[in-house]
Every structure is written in structure tokens, then in C-alpha cells.
Amino acid sequence: TDRAGVIPRKPRPGGGSVRKPAYQRILLKLSGEALMGRKAFGIDEEILAGLSKEIREVTEMGVQVALVVGGGNIFRGIGSGRNLGIDRASADYMGMLATVINSIALQEVLEQNGVDTRVLSAIELRAIAEPYIRRRAMRHLEKGRVVIFAAGTGNPYFTTDTAAALRAMEINADAILKATK
Ligand code: UDP
Image (tube, protein in one colour):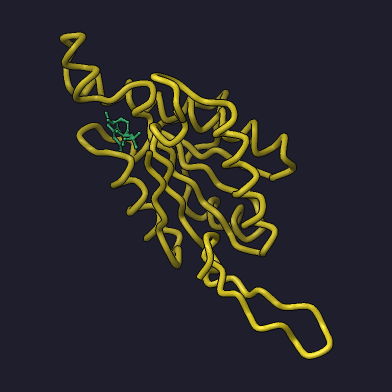
């Protein structure tokens, strides 16, 4: 397969080549650090724009895309919490909110690139995102919308890798792809 997970087909006699996607539905996990690029903190706009274009190309092939975004570029429960001397569970909630910040950034840039998106949050944030409802997520995917799962699993003491595995199982994804730094 090539970089986009696509099996290149031989050219058809007398016609163009048909590229059939290897997967129908994928879950892509982006770590917070993947959004950071060469910055020491936060989000790199060029990385965000590049990712959005690649995600758009994949959706244009007819692949349904769900995203789980980490938060380590902004706040990570264990390390950042310990430095501040705060309770682990509270620090983890801060980490989950960091994933929401990244999810909204990704949503905005995807939409600017013409991709229809929905952010579904595991922690209720009514003014910002839809609540996570499995059947709703499936419906969005069937309609070709990119679904962004924010706030991890909604539980402290977990990571967004767990959220990626959990959501991938829930939505019957064909593959989990993980992009870290
Ligand atoms: N987190 C959590 N529960 C979850 C997902 C994330 O408590 O289900 C918190 C945890 O503190 C974690 C932080 O959110 O360190 C950011 O997520 P993660 O470290 O997975 O981000 P990444 O390393 O992918 O950037």
C-alpha cells in the first residue's frame, strides 16, 4: 500500500486507473505532539494545514475517517500535574480539556479545507461539542463527516491511546492508524 493506505491498482486497458481504498472506515489517532511540529508547545499551523489536506484526500476516496486527538502538546496529566503539585485526577481532567482544544483547532482547519466535521466529546461541553453518542457518531460517518472524538475516554487514569482503541472498536473501524511525533 502507499502512504494513504491505498492499494494502487493496475491501469485499466484504455482507461484511467482505479484506486480502491484498502479500508472503508479508519480511526486515526494523532498525538498532541504530532500537532506541535517544531514548536516546543501548542499547535503548529503548517502541520495542522498539512494534516487537514491529507485527511481531506482520504475522505475524497470515500474512506470514513474518525479522529482521536491527544493533548500532550498542551497538558499531560502525569508530568504537568506533578509539576503543579495537583491531584492526579484533576490533572487528567486538564489533559482531557487539552484534547478538546486540539480537536476544535483541527475541526476549524478541516472545515476551512471543505471537510464536514463534528466534534463529539466524552465530557459534556454543550456550547462547544456534541456529546459522545455512539449511534450518532456512526451516523455522521455514514454521511461522510469526519468525526473528532474529544476528551479521550472521559475518565482520568487513561490516555488517548485507550480512547482510540475503545472508539475504534465501538465504531467497527477497519484499522487504527497512529501518528505521533
Ligand atoms: N486523559 C485522561 N483520560 C483519557 C484521555 C486522556 O485522563 O481518556 C488525560 C491524561 O492526563 C493524558 C492527557 O489527557 O496525559 C492527554 O492525553 P495523552 O497523554 O493521551 O495525549 P498524547 O500523548 O496523545 O498527546
